[in-house]
Length: 187
Image (tube, rainbow, N blue to C red; front, side, top):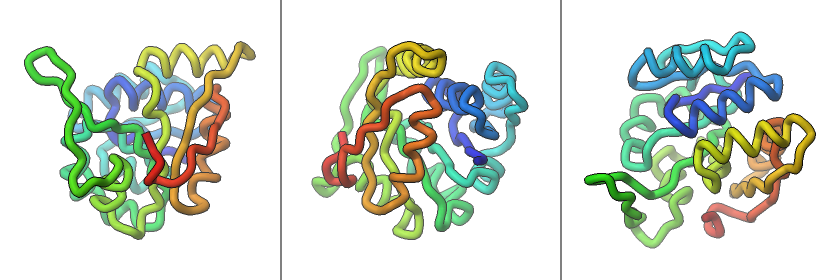
């Protein structure tokens, strides 16, 4: 399976590395081509780099691993290429300002992935996962699970059968997939 990673920062690069190790074809992208190239190089296994639009077109599944505040802009840039695809949302409504982490309000009383679904449109099949671990934990725990060590739980949420399609990715990334329910129940 081909996975496009939009955003090759801490979470995107860690997730991509785990998926390459799990046997997936991965194309990393970022606003800065150098970040995507570095992530692809670190992942090895034939991982490639390109633009966010190329990653969206490449992936049968696309992970949008960008800061929560940047999500609408990125969705507008690549939106048409996501039509009908499964999109993984590992973002959380947080930001860093003046060296502090701040929790952001999600509009209209929605959960974060419900809002992201609204931003992306109903023709995108959103699944919320890979958002419950810090980037260093994601890589360490996933690698341990891939090497036969204990597997950490990785919850996932979605409103249609798309969430079933990410279970193999979660398992191959070294985690135990835990169904958390619909997007309204998501953390």
